[in-house]
Structure formats: structure tokens, C-alpha cells
Amino acid sequence: MRTTIVLARHGRTEWHHGNRYTGSTDLPIDEVGIQQARLLKEWAEGYAPDALWSSPMLRARQTIAPLAEALGLEPTVDARLREVDFGSAEGKMLSELPPVVAKAFELDPVKDHFPGGEDPAEAADRVHEVFHQIGKQHEGGRVLVLAHNTLIRLLVCRVLGLPLSEYRRLLPALGPAALVRFRWQDGTVGLEAYNVPAVRMETLA
Image 1 (cartoon, rainbow, N blue to C red):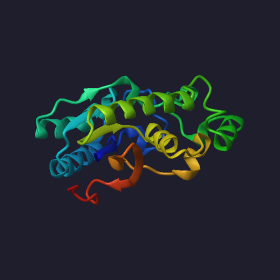
Image 2: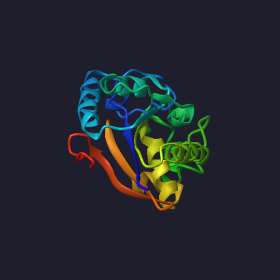
Image 3: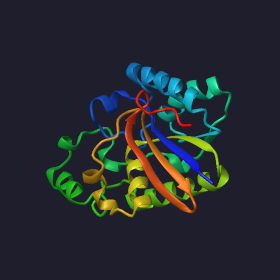
């Protein structure tokens, strides 16, 4: 039985526009983010998901709210879908960090994650756990999940068996409100699409 899970990144915030690490900082989406949420809503109306899941963070809830209202669905809010906490890097660009910290992070962002921040391996564990729960709970259906940039990239690596330490190099970009589509079928999970703007993702039959 085929199950489709689409993960969407939230709309843009002021810090994301400046490429600052946002992580656990609970910022709202900006004017561009509001427009991106509207485009996501229009796509979701064609996708017609059976269920919605969301990170509890404000930027995620604001992005999913218009489509939830349009579809008449109440999102399941799960803390395991929150973004990685970046510790001392919160609110800063990579270039603003001490060079030794930035260099170590670029070489291995898991082993040498930002001081005071969450271990990305632990974040990968929690999102992988909720991902499997979603798949089992909505077997044969379509699910839209609103989450975050780094968390989604860690999930892609974990599902595909790629080294977590390579998530920044192997998956260098995931745009605001962009989509990642997984297929569950016959006990296996496959990646069908990555970093696709909602306006370009075809309506699923």
C-alpha cells in the first residue's frame, strides 16, 4: 500500500533572509514568508492531504495555518518536529562565529556542532521516530508535514542511509516553503523529490 509523506519547510523569517541561524529562536514569518505560505496553501488544495502534522514553532504554525483552514484539517503539533537548537550560533551568521568554531562545524557539523546546541544525531533520532509514526498512522494516505531546514536534511540522510556528517555538503539547500516527497511502499521508503517549490510540484494522483 502506497503512502505519500510530503515535508514542507516553513516560510521565510527576517533571520532566514539574512542567513542567520534561527534554530530554537521562535520568530514569525516575514512578508515574503506570508506569500510563500499562500503559495503552499494553493498547492496543498490540489494535493488534498488526508492529514497535517506540524512543528510547534511559530514560523511553522503560521505557514501551515492558511492551508489548514482551507482544507478544514487540524494539524497534529509534535515537538519532535522542531528545528535543531544551534546554541551559541543562534542569531548569527557563520561568518560571525569564532573561526575555530566555524571551521570545525564546516568539517563535521555533527561531531563539532555549535557549542550549547543540540546534537544533530539526537535531532535525527527524534525526527526519524516521528516520521515512522506518521507513516504507520496514515498508511495508504497522503500526509503534509511542516518542519525545518536542518531537521529535514538530517531526516533525508537518516532515511537514505547517508552519513549525517555530510548533510550540509550532500544537501546544501532547502528553500523556504520548498517540498520534499517520500514514498512508503512494501515496507520501504524512497525519496521521490527534494527542494521543489510548491508551485512546481505536480499534483499527486
